[in-house]
Length: 249
Image (cartoon, helix red, strand yellow):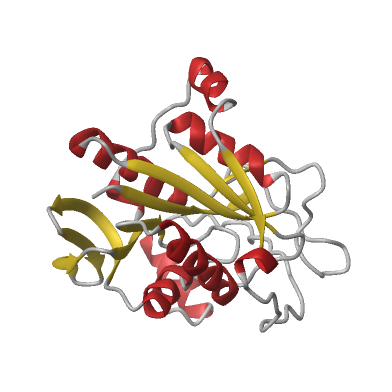
């Protein structure tokens, strides 16, 4: 194995309380803290750990987004990625377009393994990894909670409804990672300074031969309903009575 490509997305930081625009056309992003998608950050951490175990592997971080996405890619470089590529786009990119873009980068970079989060926390689509594997015509392993490299094969433990499932796929392959795979490392100031000198290339959808388009139309965005106040009951009998009145039992 010589190269691992990690696909990453810029999202609203998970600590930020998301606010819906007054007209319901989407989520307010002005002045909101943005960060790497947590699942993608886990994917990057796994790539770095594989590099530390195997050695002599290039870790490439790639992303699609506005010019400010360079900030998140610099964070990836500070974590330990060797270089980064930003496919600049001022419009939102849907999963299929993202998969086609990553496929163009795969053909250009020829990675042995592509890692990405199982989903992004903004749209929760959980589609890009699977679409990329299908377009690339390579094996995929989703919801990975453990990854072991064995020469030209990789053994992946997956989290499924019934428990854990272990599969083996040939490289090159696409792996989407789950929350319990690892805990991303803390970025230190010296690493941030070093990241400023690492190469970060900027390209575009047109340059990669990808046609941007809109297949999904957001009709309306609504905030979640406010939670009702809780009811205090004196004993189990009163609790049962309340639940019966609400039609819950």
